Image (cartoon, rainbow, N blue to C red; front, side, top):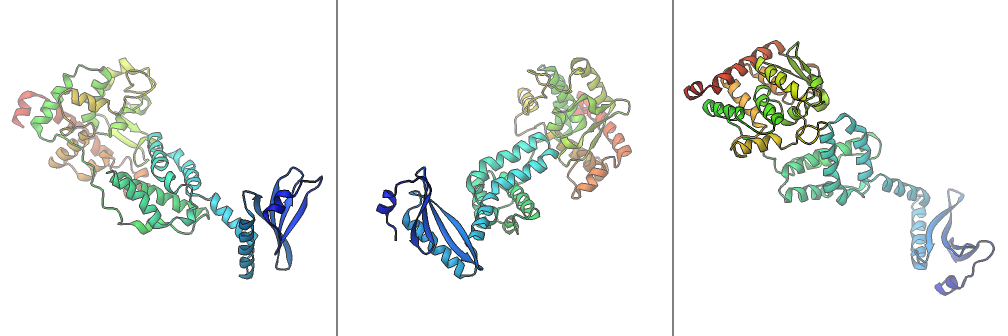
Length: 395
């Protein structure tokens, strides 16, 4: 039987030698002075060896405890070496490693801004808490703690998005044979519903006219001015407008084709261009036509306008955050066009609202295009009437 004194007094030799403790436990003393615990055992008639660590990091008592645990495993009909391999495999299949693998496979098809948001949420709100856990060891309560932490700081919408992302990671793990179930599915209804984001807008005709006249009188950065004038005529999402590239515009066919990778639903979106929209673009072409972006930033022609450029301009014009935002031009068009009796399907298609069926969205981007062309021109003409002081007052 070994004791700590015997182990410490064992001097290295030219060749490795063994000190035995009993029950198959031995300590290998190497010529360089290192001491390794080994366990010899038999399983299914075959002699096998299991490494138990290095002395003194693994003490004599700890080595004996591991030996005893291994003997109990054998008595139960299981191979300790196989169980060790399974545990190592589980540790290599951590949530973070699988999430990063999932991200690398899917993010290539996403808009860069979307990919950055997804990874930032994982790195800030998920990995620090369950990232190092084997994905098969994570339970629904474990994941709920992560979500509750985000909810607790008032970011309920973000908590819901993280829930969705984690569900995608679990389903990827199932598909790749690294997990058997998606525990995020057990949390449906665990978070309170997120309030639908409200984008302040102006929908009263007289006030719309006043807004359009204020935009006409804007004396700031010319590129921002052009973007503000175009926004009500195309009512796309602010990011889609800011990142517009000249190559996307077909003036002959009077349309703007936004590529799938820049759209929320990853489907091409066609914006019919009214004569008023084309006039704005022609004027701007002399200023930015040689650049990639239609609306380049003030500091670099190689980058589009910043996220806040249009909203900052609206604030400068005297419109508070709760009155109108750049996104509010969409609500403005939707409300008025519906009130004027235009076909709801035309309006929804022009707004590029999410389809339940992503495949359908990808193939039907030209749906109702002739009708939408007429609608967009009538909308532009209507805005012209509101811009006129008398017409606006009459409205």
